[in-house]
Amino acid sequence: MDVCILNSGFGSRLKRHTAKVPKALVPLGDDHTLLELQLSSLERLGSFRYAITTGYLDGMIQSHVEQRFPGLPVTYFPNKRYDTTNYITSLLALQGSFDDELVLLHGDLLFERSVMEDVLRVKGSVVVVDSTLPLPEKDFKARVVDGKVVEIGVDVFGDDCHACQPLYHLTKRDWNVWQRAIADFCARGETGVYAEHALNSVGAAIELYPLDVKGRICMEIDDESDLEKAKRIMEQIV
Image (cartoon, rainbow, N blue to C red; front, side, top):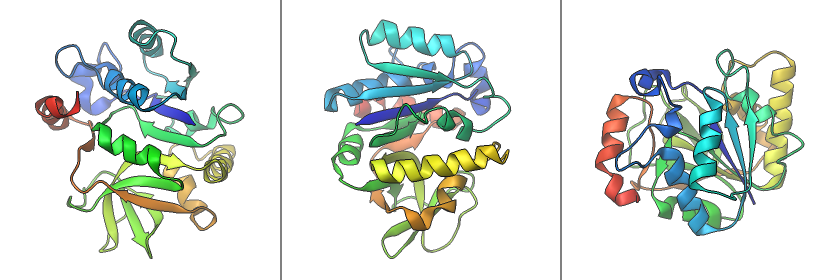
């Protein structure tokens, strides 16, 4: 199984902390970083081949991983257009190198280990949702119809929607279908959109289901309030 962690962006809503380090390396206390917590949890749960997309201050990501996780099988995919495109172009770079069953997550995602255990355990394609949370205004929601995820986006609302986090387990088939859609979007110059736009365009061709964490910790750290909350719950993560 492969694991891809998206770490290309600047993290503009945390610019006071990301002026000198990528968002994934912002300290959460006691020298812990998001990237360290993600990789530590994954290492405890199995042996994987890793892809890490980079962009802003990408050399710092590589140095951090080499220092904290020597020998970890990582391939880095620098995105030189990280400041003018969305992460759809970062995922485009994986084509031809990472085409197997895939766990895909954003680099600013904080989760408790049991969530990742469940993500790894499932046999089909899933994305994490949380039915206990109110629908966020600016973050991802997933529309679920007849038990299947049919749409993911920030502008998705309705009684059939749940708060959604960008943590996926994808079968080889479904990931390759999504990759082809990503390539089509980028070929048309549609690089300023989320990769989920491409996913939605092929929703009828894949079998994506919700994995409901029901209140367990799985959150993106986007702004100052998220960062402070993450620091308060660190004891439940480490």
